[in-house]
Length: 111
Image 1 (cartoon, rainbow, N blue to C red):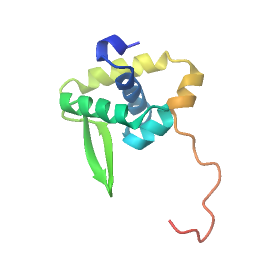
Image 2: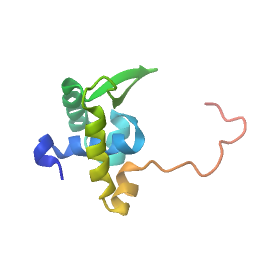
Image 3: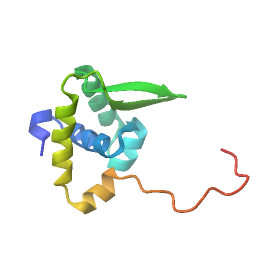
């Protein structure tokens, strides 16, 4: 859909993932999107260089989210969200929507 506009299908998938989940990290994207981590890291770097996303650290993990200081963020997110709404439901469930845990953690299990 936006491959020619963004120059990469991976960038498009990352934007869809961020619309659905608000934040992510590289290995999570690689696992859910079934893409090599090297391509994911390059695409995240391109988006960050343009100012669309920003990163912060949670422990040792570098987490990416929308950059609230990006001047066109509301318009950009609404464009991506509109395109995301037209994706087939099976693609949304397969790649972008994180499944919820169905049972509670075992009592006494260490974190």
